[in-house]
Length: 268
Image (tube, rainbow, N blue to C red):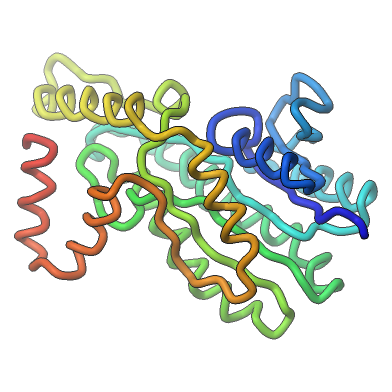
């Protein structure tokens, strides 16, 4: 019996790397993408060049995997970037760049893979979102918006794909110990900014959360668990109890009370 084939975007580091290496250990054929792969294979991950903002590289990467394997059983959309800053002071081009990566790029990759999945009458698309996508977080509002948009789009996509035997779900991680903080765009803390104090303090708190986050292997194991589901649910959350509880509280508490709770958490 041939191995099931997995394509993971953003597999050169962090959560994507952990997922790829773990799935290789579980006997999947794993293809991982990065914009500029440094090697063709590492720790069981076969790398292909792909930039989620470039349609031509997406098409080439998907074609390469299909040529080698004849199928893609699982697509895991993990590639993404972070962004922080007061929305008023975040440059428009940076807002557009993060939407191009975290939202429009994901849609482009899905579109490229769907025809082959429809032809084989099976397939499973897993979108890695974020617990931040369930709420508008101060100084991380644009990031929250990109992940929240993907959560909602997946809800619609699932219903459109059911007749073709294709499954789709979201898995939303909380804070994990990865290099996302180093790679994200930070709007500078300006000396003359009215947001200087609160943004500066919130930025330190966010970096502390990431550096003290869980091991990405926890996320890898959850992804593998979800991959075994015959009838996956729409939303999964992975993170510390408090992070997951914050989503439940948003549905229970009055809006202004929830807002006050967030502001207290971020010391605003």
